[in-house]
Image 1: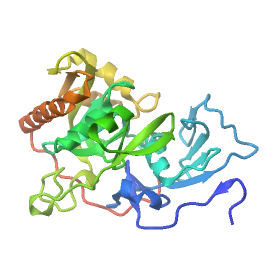
Image 2 (image 1 turned 30 degrees about the vertical axis):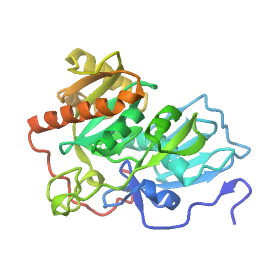
Image 3 (image 1 turned 180 degrees about the horizontal axis):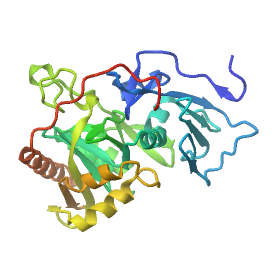
Length: 332
């Protein structure tokens, strides 16, 4: 039996994955995760109420080579431990599996990515032309609305909040997008979750990647039935989101690309793969300027989707995804 300060873990079920992590303790949110293919790092998730020794104020944060203490948006603390391959949330109210998966798993995703030498960005991402395109922007730039409008325009989602890059591959995040009320009302969709983290959210669960001709997922047309978003998609480039009176897509000057990438790092630490970060500067980067008016969001999405398809067609064919090895039992 759990003690008074513990919350029982979710019942066991088929292992699902996000951000390159196999997550056996989040069976209650399996519909928001993809099936594990193998090669993911098994990661445990625990939840408990704050104990006498817990400092649950969200002020100080600490990350080193073995553990991280971070604040939980909305109140509480999260301990991320490399050796135990585990995350423990200490919050006054127990977080549900769905709340852990999104948005609270993002801090674990970014921290473990850092330990693995991977880059993690605050970004949404979609697949166009067999390549992943990251959507960059400050808070309030409309990343989630842009993501969902592109999904409605026929593109495959990769992630809503944090983009983890394994070399040139974009790893999939949770299969959902959290909208704000105006966007939810405009699209006529979204379950009202109330306040999760720091804001009220209207959640849209997204289907698993669809199979295209030949049985392969549409996100990565290689002919490999195991390929697609679940295996990671080669990064094609970046879309910098901005507001303006009209709709325009223009190249981002090279000198503005590095500051934007540094601002987008999910952890305010020196990037673990500096060479990889510099290589990202060679990828296409465009600035999408569009009006705030939601009645124009579908036309903007169609315009951007077409542009991304053209950019993908100009690049060499994406590399095939790696084979699916056994799930890793150690974080490395």
